[in-house]
Length: 193
Image (cartoon, rainbow, N blue to C red; front, side, top):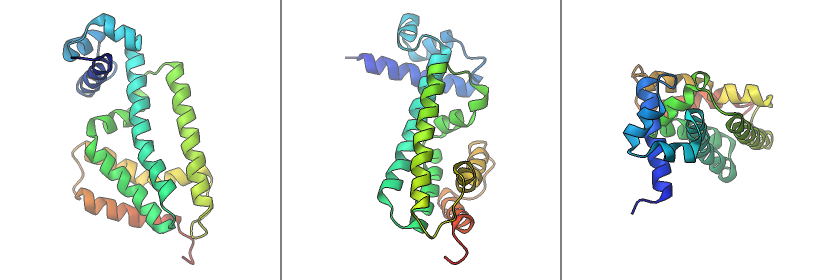
């Protein structure tokens, strides 16, 4: 028996594929309906609009990614191992979720509803606070403002993600995770570490 949650997930899955194939702007509710096998009424019941679908996809995708980051920050006590684990998580998550990663990286092209924007801002604020606290508690790491810390930690990994998702990356995923971990550790450790 198909449950209401199955219907909701079918809509999200169909939208993710359609957004990937046609782009957010060109995708219609009709495209999502046809691909999901659900009714237009179900789509509007669950999401209200195409922007509502995009917002739900974005929030749920980012939450899934951030859950992995949070688990590392809560578990890892060693600064170097933690930094390396964060980069490994990023690379492996992109590898394991290419369509969702591509969607998340296309954020500038996607219109979201204000409610989704607010939820994303809250999620990011919480993660930045946790990340900043974790880094401040590690004497082996440099003290950076949260925005600079995030850029130094994940900037190269984000760029690699774009290359990999576009089929332009040459290095294997495991090697990339190790190399990006090396780069992040060198950038974030204090000189005497």
